[in-house]
Image 1 (cartoon, rainbow over the protein chains, first blue to last red):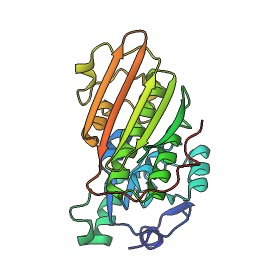
Image 2 (cartoon, rainbow over the protein chains, first blue to last red):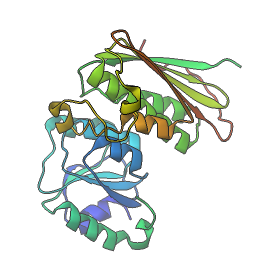
Image 3 (cartoon, one colour):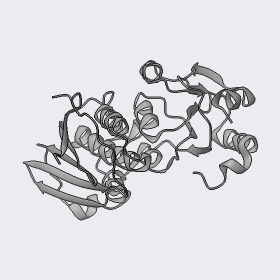
Image 4 (tube, chains in turn orange, blue):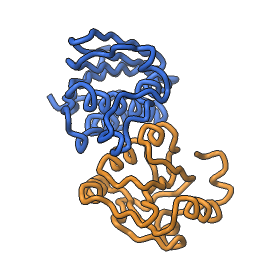
Length: 116
Length: 154
């Protein structure tokens, strides 16, 4: 499922649309950057409450398909700028990480299995 | 064949630019056709090294050598050195400040990640003089090699 389709289905607010409408192949929830960069799979939707510019660097290096800021967190300007510069898809939601991941799993279902 | 070599400067105390050197290296490896998983492992190793240099050592330099069968990443700093390497290698052990932890770092996974995602890691450290971390990531198959003219930042 494409990033734009996930965003629409989960009613996410678009902060930065991203350069490519990539495929979402799984999900990962985490705020500790070393865990995320080491564990989030390629194409994962990364759900976090971290909103600093360092999130952009980790998202790029981990090749996640999109960043979703949970709990109504809004991105710092530096994060939004970096996401824009590097073509990262950056969204926010008032939902918590649990609800987001539950709904995401319902959306992408079996393709999520085995992907962290 | 010659080994391709890039050098990157790592700014100390600048978290906003942390990851830029890793990003540049990643683009170079992608350009010359290195396998995706190898690039991912190199990026993780390099990024953790960058962050450690910013947090603990006021920056340093990263040298990346690409050979026909491996990537070698050499990270050098002139920081305080690592007092207890065994402790530092333990998952969850960290001496990072509260300020650094609030940015999402300091999980105590830096060196453990570097060990996990490299095939070989060597750490030379002297208190008051600095630390050099050398990591090897070996290819499973040969990479297609191209120009390295525009790599690095020095």
